[in-house]
Length: 101
Image (cartoon, rainbow, N blue to C red; front, side, top):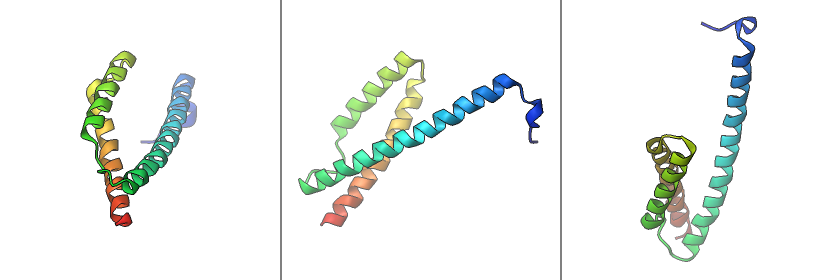
């Protein structure tokens, strides 16, 4: 059931606007991150480096978990989110490496 605009409290409207702004910022930040990781993938392919760096990935997971705890965010969620992103980055790096062969 759709809410009528006049029935929505002003506070809820403001919170939703903030959420919308944050969602837009997240999309832009992720796009920028993937642009950067595409460049990393090209560099790795040029230098015959593997698409994945497990030691670096584990360092990043530990770092992100610490940041999440400091920020009041569930560290388990933060880790799942980062692992999802890293898996996608590795997939891109594998595609780049395959294209350069």
